[in-house]
Image (cartoon, rainbow, N blue to C red):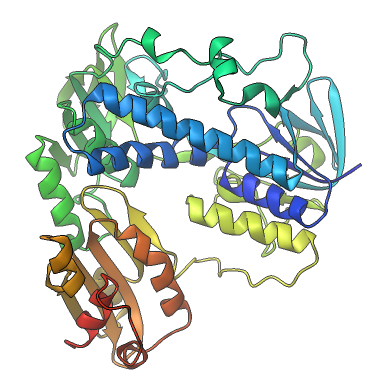
Length: 473
């Protein structure tokens, strides 16, 4: 019997499995699709890789982008495999389903474990009953317009379980046909001439940024009145202006009621009766949890939002955990990682300080051009809560390091209450996502503005933007 069995190799499953194995437990990880799941292979990280290449070289050709992307995705695959192997995690490819409270079947093999961690993630929901993959896309199909690293098949020919070593992205596997050689890939006509994106949320805006940079005519439709709903207007505006400069159109306050397709285009019908057409339509709306087969049969409680868990991410079934998107608490990679680590520590018998269920102080980032990143409350939230606040704002271009780097845009906005406590730190600019993790610690520890004013910063550095802003309060 295994000590731990993990279902799913995305961020939550990867961190849970490696931490348990590094601490001497016998761990097996089961993955039904591609190693890395949505977070590492099919969503968040791949999009950031593409955007990073474009940001670093705005004049890059589409062909060179794909070559660079493939190399980096090989690095992701190699890291996943080597990290799991180094930690001592056993890896099996195939779909696992519950047959008992402590047993999972993967094809013809039954694996028993003292603890089972469900980290099966989520999938795009389908509110219009559309068929994915032709003219109507999820983020996965949108990535496969550029994705060159997807194995032809993860299915075993003999009904057995596939082990990770068969899928390393080395030259041998490329020669065996798992991955097409670059000289056999046609780069022509891969991008659509136009695309409609449903949802001006983080996912929608990041894809709009990517596609528009290569001349695709992008139209973004959002039911709410704002682009990037839930963000202050001064944070939204620089991103909107950049996208408009690349000929992106926005339709806000518009509800989509129907989504159809013909052989060569997608047709979007709005509530006002207007229809729009494009070669492709990317749906960036809600997501649904992936509930493992057999979960209901062993009594695991769940609903449309996800699997129900307690403060330790335990389900109602003893020794069965659910972490990440599968429990629906907060669909973010950072939260999935945190929950995977927390579940592992609980299994290891260590005292765990769990983030509160509202995830206040959660660092967030939008990898558009420019980036938006921050932690804590925004102005609209402070007004909604009736909290009085002061604004400390400073431009990156006016920091000493910003001058030396030639910064021309970007700013920090610090929100401080009447008790001198930080309520929010928000930034717009180049690579601001790199700051926000550290800033989240300041808010979690309820640090006062005066403490920061009396702290030492590296000089010259971009981090001084926080000090410069607060000195102007």
